[in-house]
Image (cartoon, rainbow, N blue to C red):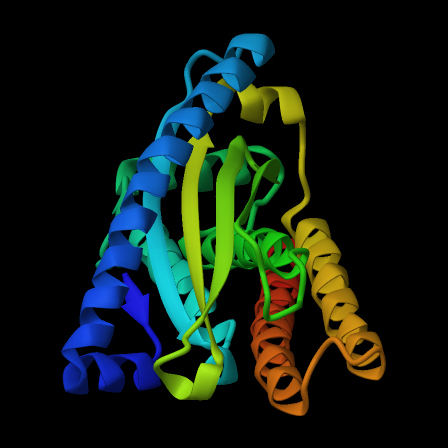
Length: 273
């Protein structure tokens, strides 16, 4: 579980506040258990209906986060996703609360190669999947009411990532007004439950997929997200600080995706020359 810097500072100084956060964490842990059970049933139903009975878990985990309203940032979410992607495709260390199966990641990369991604490797597939997951999770999160008075809400989503992989996730959020701390400002709590499954049968049913085209589609989606921020600022739904934070997250992802896309095209060109 994570906390923003000001909350960490207050917890260190004020026992009453530390106890209050501990109570909220206990609530989150119970929510994670309850929502996790519901999500597991939805995943079972998905594969029972599809007939892809060979699915294996690539990634599974939960992450909870507390942030002061003046410090809300997508940076923490992106860091978590990047670390999970690194553990899955590069055999690195994952984040607390997440389990990754490197063997499942290797099978997904091989599926990408088989499905027409002749230049696919762990780095190209890993960045593509990490970008897709960030896009999906942040999209669910930002679809919640932007008001500081955010009543408890949660949303479940499943979406194909391509190459035989599917993301299943549940995002929950709620805000609390701290009457005794932070001058009556709000504290947000977020809970992310996620599971990525890989299925050879699903990969076969998806047919050939061009990794270059997948990257181009992802890049277009990221640029749309970035452009949407301007409208949110004009509508008063985003502060200047939030705009800087979120635009940086998307610009960094766009830059990394563009660089990988150019390398991918160059690699394919050299192979065809």
